[in-house]
Length: 263
Image 1 (cartoon, rainbow, N blue to C red):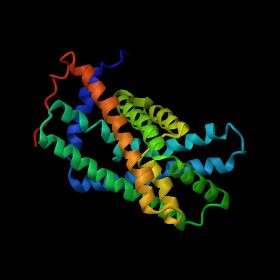
Image 2 (image 1 turned 180 degrees about the vertical axis):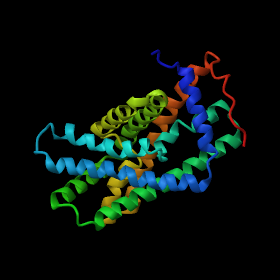
Image 3 (image 1 turned 45 degrees about the vertical axis):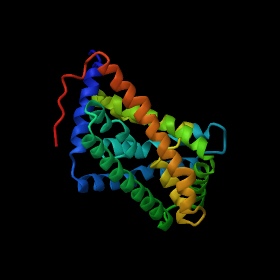
Image 4 (image 1 turned 90 degrees about the vertical axis):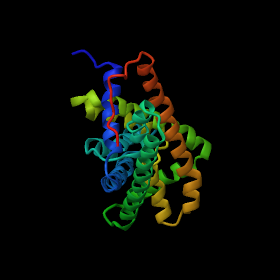
Protein backbone atom coordinates (compact mmCIF):
# COMPACT_ATOMS: atom_id res chain seq x y z
CA UNK A 1 0.00 0.00 0.00
CA UNK A 2 1.23 3.47 -0.86
CA UNK A 3 2.42 5.57 2.06
CA UNK A 4 0.32 8.66 2.86
CA UNK A 5 1.67 11.97 1.62
CA UNK A 6 3.10 14.61 3.94
CA UNK A 7 -0.05 16.67 3.35
CA UNK A 8 -2.31 13.85 4.55
CA UNK A 9 -0.20 13.31 7.69
CA UNK A 10 -0.05 17.06 8.28
CA UNK A 11 -3.81 17.50 8.03
CA UNK A 12 -4.53 14.48 10.23
CA UNK A 13 -2.37 16.00 12.97
CA UNK A 14 -3.97 19.42 12.37
CA UNK A 15 -7.40 17.92 13.02
CA UNK A 16 -6.18 16.12 16.15
CA UNK A 17 -4.48 19.30 17.38
CA UNK A 18 -7.63 21.34 16.91
CA UNK A 19 -9.57 18.77 18.94
CA UNK A 20 -6.95 18.84 21.71
CA UNK A 21 -7.09 22.64 21.89
CA UNK A 22 -10.84 22.43 22.40
CA UNK A 23 -10.68 19.92 25.27
CA UNK A 24 -11.91 21.09 28.70
CA UNK A 25 -9.35 22.04 31.33
CA UNK A 26 -10.39 19.22 33.62
CA UNK A 27 -9.98 16.58 30.92
CA UNK A 28 -6.51 17.87 30.03
CA UNK A 29 -5.49 17.99 33.69
CA UNK A 30 -6.54 14.43 34.49
CA UNK A 31 -4.93 13.11 31.33
CA UNK A 32 -1.75 15.06 32.08
CA UNK A 33 -1.62 13.70 35.62
CA UNK A 34 -2.10 10.14 34.36
CA UNK A 35 0.69 10.67 31.83
CA UNK A 36 3.09 12.03 34.46
CA UNK A 37 2.46 8.95 36.57
CA UNK A 38 2.72 6.54 33.64
CA UNK A 39 5.99 7.94 32.30
CA UNK A 40 7.57 7.06 35.64
CA UNK A 41 7.54 3.42 34.56
CA UNK A 42 10.33 4.31 32.11
CA UNK A 43 12.43 5.22 35.15
CA UNK A 44 11.47 2.10 37.10
CA UNK A 45 11.87 -0.30 34.16
CA UNK A 46 15.40 0.94 33.47
CA UNK A 47 16.37 0.40 37.10
CA UNK A 48 14.85 -3.10 37.20
CA UNK A 49 16.67 -4.13 34.03
CA UNK A 50 19.98 -2.57 35.10
CA UNK A 51 19.80 -4.36 38.46
CA UNK A 52 19.27 -7.72 36.77
CA UNK A 53 22.09 -7.36 34.26
CA UNK A 54 25.83 -7.88 34.78
CA UNK A 55 28.16 -4.92 35.04
CA UNK A 56 29.35 -4.81 31.43
CA UNK A 57 29.77 -2.26 28.64
CA UNK A 58 26.73 -3.60 26.78
CA UNK A 59 24.37 -3.44 29.78
CA UNK A 60 23.02 -0.01 28.84
CA UNK A 61 22.09 -1.31 25.38
CA UNK A 62 19.55 -3.60 27.08
CA UNK A 63 18.45 -1.50 30.06
CA UNK A 64 17.63 1.41 27.73
CA UNK A 65 14.71 -0.65 26.43
CA UNK A 66 13.10 0.03 29.79
CA UNK A 67 12.89 3.69 28.82
CA UNK A 68 10.28 2.77 26.21
CA UNK A 69 7.82 1.31 28.72
CA UNK A 70 6.39 4.58 30.02
CA UNK A 71 6.12 6.01 26.52
CA UNK A 72 4.26 2.93 25.30
CA UNK A 73 1.76 3.30 28.15
CA UNK A 74 1.30 7.01 27.50
CA UNK A 75 1.01 6.87 23.71
CA UNK A 76 -1.08 3.71 23.37
CA UNK A 77 -3.23 4.89 26.30
CA UNK A 78 -3.80 8.28 24.60
CA UNK A 79 -2.59 10.26 27.62
CA UNK A 80 -1.36 13.87 27.44
CA UNK A 81 2.44 14.16 27.42
CA UNK A 82 3.99 17.61 27.14
CA UNK A 83 6.56 16.76 24.47
CA UNK A 84 3.89 15.35 22.16
CA UNK A 85 2.26 18.76 22.36
CA UNK A 86 5.22 20.52 20.78
CA UNK A 87 3.76 19.30 17.48
CA UNK A 88 0.06 18.40 17.69
CA UNK A 89 -1.47 21.70 18.95
CA UNK A 90 1.23 23.84 17.33
CA UNK A 91 0.19 22.96 13.78
CA UNK A 92 -3.25 24.61 14.14
CA UNK A 93 -1.51 27.79 15.29
CA UNK A 94 0.93 27.68 12.37
CA UNK A 95 -2.10 27.32 10.11
CA UNK A 96 -3.92 30.23 11.79
CA UNK A 97 -1.46 32.53 13.55
CA UNK A 98 -3.94 34.57 15.54
CA UNK A 99 -3.41 35.44 19.21
CA UNK A 100 -6.60 33.59 20.16
CA UNK A 101 -5.19 30.33 18.79
CA UNK A 102 -1.76 30.85 20.36
CA UNK A 103 -3.43 31.56 23.70
CA UNK A 104 -5.15 28.17 23.50
CA UNK A 105 -1.78 26.53 22.76
CA UNK A 106 -0.25 28.22 25.84
CA UNK A 107 -3.24 27.12 27.94
CA UNK A 108 -2.80 23.49 26.86
CA UNK A 109 0.96 23.61 27.41
CA UNK A 110 0.60 25.07 30.91
CA UNK A 111 -2.03 22.56 32.04
CA UNK A 112 -0.23 19.53 30.63
CA UNK A 113 3.25 20.58 31.79
CA UNK A 114 2.17 21.26 35.37
CA UNK A 115 0.09 18.08 35.71
CA UNK A 116 2.82 15.99 34.06
CA UNK A 117 5.36 17.25 36.59
CA UNK A 118 2.97 16.68 39.50
CA UNK A 119 2.42 13.13 38.26
CA UNK A 120 6.17 12.56 37.90
CA UNK A 121 6.80 13.71 41.48
CA UNK A 122 3.90 11.62 42.75
CA UNK A 123 5.36 8.53 41.06
CA UNK A 124 8.77 9.22 42.61
CA UNK A 125 7.13 9.66 46.02
CA UNK A 126 5.33 6.32 45.66
CA UNK A 127 8.63 4.66 44.73
CA UNK A 128 10.18 6.07 47.88
CA UNK A 129 7.33 4.74 50.02
CA UNK A 130 7.30 1.25 48.54
CA UNK A 131 9.09 -1.69 50.14
CA UNK A 132 8.67 -3.79 47.00
CA UNK A 133 12.15 -3.19 45.61
CA UNK A 134 15.47 -4.66 46.68
CA UNK A 135 18.43 -2.52 47.58
CA UNK A 136 20.03 -3.09 44.19
CA UNK A 137 17.02 -1.60 42.42
CA UNK A 138 17.04 1.40 44.74
CA UNK A 139 20.73 1.88 44.02
CA UNK A 140 19.98 1.91 40.30
CA UNK A 141 17.11 4.38 40.78
CA UNK A 142 19.47 6.72 42.59
CA UNK A 143 22.19 6.28 39.97
CA UNK A 144 19.79 7.14 37.14
CA UNK A 145 18.67 10.27 38.97
CA UNK A 146 22.25 11.33 39.68
CA UNK A 147 23.14 10.92 36.00
CA UNK A 148 20.22 13.14 34.98
CA UNK A 149 21.03 15.97 37.41
CA UNK A 150 24.83 15.82 37.12
CA UNK A 151 25.03 17.08 33.56
CA UNK A 152 25.66 20.76 32.99
CA UNK A 153 22.59 22.82 32.04
CA UNK A 154 24.07 23.26 28.56
CA UNK A 155 24.54 19.50 28.10
CA UNK A 156 20.99 18.93 29.33
CA UNK A 157 19.62 21.55 26.92
CA UNK A 158 21.45 20.21 23.86
CA UNK A 159 20.46 16.63 24.66
CA UNK A 160 16.88 17.78 25.22
CA UNK A 161 16.78 19.24 21.72
CA UNK A 162 17.38 15.75 20.34
CA UNK A 163 14.75 14.28 22.68
CA UNK A 164 12.15 16.87 21.66
CA UNK A 165 13.05 16.35 18.01
CA UNK A 166 12.67 12.56 18.23
CA UNK A 167 9.42 12.56 20.23
CA UNK A 168 7.80 15.06 17.87
CA UNK A 169 8.95 12.94 14.91
CA UNK A 170 7.32 9.97 16.63
CA UNK A 171 4.05 11.92 16.79
CA UNK A 172 4.42 12.77 13.09
CA UNK A 173 4.80 9.07 12.23
CA UNK A 174 1.93 7.75 14.36
CA UNK A 175 -1.30 8.81 12.57
CA UNK A 176 -0.94 6.17 9.84
CA UNK A 177 1.38 3.71 11.60
CA UNK A 178 -1.60 1.47 12.50
CA UNK A 179 -0.26 -1.94 13.62
CA UNK A 180 3.29 -0.54 13.70
CA UNK A 181 2.45 2.03 16.41
CA UNK A 182 4.00 -0.19 19.09
CA UNK A 183 7.28 -0.46 17.18
CA UNK A 184 7.44 3.23 16.30
CA UNK A 185 7.14 4.18 19.98
CA UNK A 186 9.48 1.40 21.13
CA UNK A 187 12.30 2.27 18.74
CA UNK A 188 12.18 6.06 19.07
CA UNK A 189 11.83 6.07 22.87
CA UNK A 190 14.65 3.49 23.04
CA UNK A 191 16.88 5.84 21.05
CA UNK A 192 16.09 8.70 23.45
CA UNK A 193 16.97 6.50 26.41
CA UNK A 194 20.07 5.05 24.76
CA UNK A 195 21.39 8.51 23.95
CA UNK A 196 20.66 9.79 27.44
CA UNK A 197 18.78 12.72 25.89
CA UNK A 198 16.94 14.76 28.52
CA UNK A 199 13.16 14.47 28.46
CA UNK A 200 11.54 17.06 30.71
CA UNK A 201 8.87 14.72 32.14
CA UNK A 202 10.62 11.33 32.17
CA UNK A 203 13.71 13.02 33.59
CA UNK A 204 11.61 14.80 36.21
CA UNK A 205 10.66 11.39 37.64
CA UNK A 206 14.34 10.53 37.87
CA UNK A 207 15.43 13.75 39.56
CA UNK A 208 12.28 13.87 41.72
CA UNK A 209 13.40 10.60 43.32
CA UNK A 210 16.47 12.45 44.59
CA UNK A 211 14.42 15.48 45.63
CA UNK A 212 12.04 13.28 47.66
CA UNK A 213 15.02 11.74 49.47
CA UNK A 214 16.59 15.14 50.18
CA UNK A 215 19.63 14.59 47.94
CA UNK A 216 18.75 17.42 45.54
CA UNK A 217 16.94 20.69 46.23
CA UNK A 218 13.92 21.86 44.27
CA UNK A 219 15.94 24.91 43.23
CA UNK A 220 18.68 22.76 41.72
CA UNK A 221 16.10 20.58 40.00
CA UNK A 222 14.48 23.65 38.43
CA UNK A 223 17.75 25.37 37.52
CA UNK A 224 19.90 22.47 36.34
CA UNK A 225 17.28 20.15 34.86
CA UNK A 226 13.74 21.46 34.43
CA UNK A 227 14.47 24.75 32.65
CA UNK A 228 17.16 23.50 30.24
CA UNK A 229 15.26 20.27 29.49
CA UNK A 230 12.02 22.15 28.88
CA UNK A 231 13.74 24.69 26.64
CA UNK A 232 15.52 22.01 24.62
CA UNK A 233 12.42 19.85 24.20
CA UNK A 234 10.43 22.83 22.92
CA UNK A 235 13.20 23.86 20.51
CA UNK A 236 13.52 20.33 19.18
CA UNK A 237 9.80 19.72 18.82
CA UNK A 238 8.57 23.09 17.61
CA UNK A 239 11.49 24.25 15.47
CA UNK A 240 12.86 21.03 14.00
CA UNK A 241 9.58 19.17 13.49
CA UNK A 242 6.49 21.40 13.63
CA UNK A 243 7.92 24.33 11.65
CA UNK A 244 9.82 22.24 9.10
CA UNK A 245 7.03 19.76 8.42
CA UNK A 246 4.45 22.55 8.23
CA UNK A 247 6.73 24.42 5.83
CA UNK A 248 7.21 21.45 3.51
CA UNK A 249 3.43 21.15 3.14
CA UNK A 250 2.50 24.82 2.88
CA UNK A 251 5.33 25.59 0.46
CA UNK A 252 3.29 23.75 -2.13
CA UNK A 253 -0.02 25.19 -0.97
CA UNK A 254 -1.01 21.75 0.27
CA UNK A 255 -2.71 22.66 3.53
CA UNK A 256 -5.49 24.68 1.94
CA UNK A 257 -7.94 21.80 2.24
CA UNK A 258 -7.95 21.93 6.02
CA UNK A 259 -10.44 24.17 7.83
CA UNK A 260 -10.03 24.17 11.62
CA UNK A 261 -12.93 24.49 14.02
CA UNK A 262 -13.36 28.00 15.44
CA UNK A 263 -13.91 28.49 19.15
